Length: 190
Image (tube, rainbow, N blue to C red; front, side):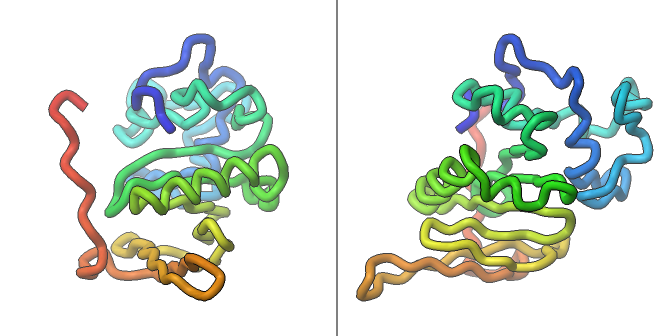
């Protein structure tokens, strides 16, 4: 889903958008998701830009790095921030502005999110929607609200073949749960 992590697609920038400063948590600043960072001026941007935390320096939303996403996915417009990471399993975090909590269920977003969820199950990946502290796991056949994840918790997805085909379930487990497979090591230079 990402062209090259950290490589911004030509013609895209954060100009005019500070949404990640509101809806993404920043542990180095003890800023929870869904509230404005105290160092953000919504009209001008980060007031500590030159000394911002490493989490912020290394963050590039999916709109900036994925050329397949069109202008409708610009966070300033859609109120959704996409973030890719590998914590336990590769995952796509879909941060949604609490003021527009249901926007991810609207088109063109919902059908694309469901397609990502179907693809993710083939690689043991996850698609998670975060609305403030609340997390919803998007599965190919349904969504499951798992509440607030603790810092030492992950989502584990299981599947089972039934009379109507494959069904999925998601539960919250501790990070050291034996069902959680560690992410494969990254190749040198990435």
